[in-house]
Image (tube, rainbow, N blue to C red; front, top):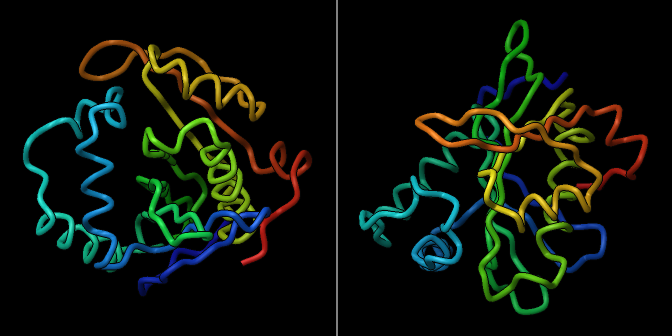
Length: 195
């Protein structure tokens, strides 16, 4: 169980291969984040992101919000390909569930890789890095990840990583696949990432 931070903590984690950097967003990332969200292929299974209210100014605001709440209630990271310093996606913990006395017990995570960068192993590498960080550094006990039932690419990635999901109803409608991952199960199969 991880102790909840009272002040924002900015994060920077290098993936095991060294190809990727997962880090807290900076103002310079606003256009790349906006571009990823505006790409219909990237948000095909994320209808809550598929609307016209996205602007660079709005993402500059969001970056400020993400940085101000980093590791207090959530964690939003950009995924950067290190060879050219290009933002190729993002990942996040959308919520932390406090257990007792402000300690974190469970986090819900998600990931988006730009469609032009898919099929190169980046999503698997970024998720592995995120899981290692959550369990090894933050000390979470459990992670939850969900995707739309029809999101076959994400389901395939989860299965490739050894995750097993369960189909559940989704609000406001439809069905989703929910993956629950225990720290003990993950850490016995994988080495942890150093930060």
